[in-house]
Image 1: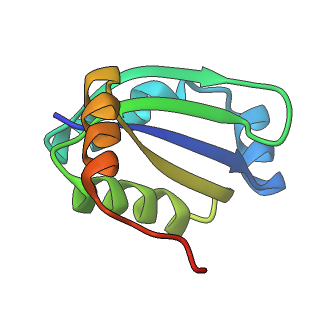
Image 2: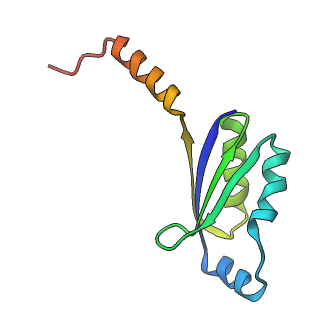
Length: 107
C-alpha cells in the first residue's frame, strides 16, 4: 500500500482549542484514516513551520487527497501538504525507467 507524508500547521483557533481542551489528535485521526482503508504509522508534533507530521499508508492518491481535504475543510489547520513516498526499490525502478525515457533537453 502506498505511503504518504502529511504535514499540517494549526490555525491560532486550532491551537486555542487544543490549549483549552488538550487532546491526543493521533487518536482522533486514526479512525478517519482507517475508514479510508489506511493505517496511521506515525504522528509527531514539531517546532517550526509545520506543527504535525503524519506517516500514513493509504490505498491510493484519491484516498490521500480525501483525508487532506477533510482536514483542511475543518478550519483547524492553516496549511496541509500530502507527499507521496516511494520505497528505495521504487526509486531505483524510477531511475531505470528515467534512463530509458529518451528525454532530450532543449538545444
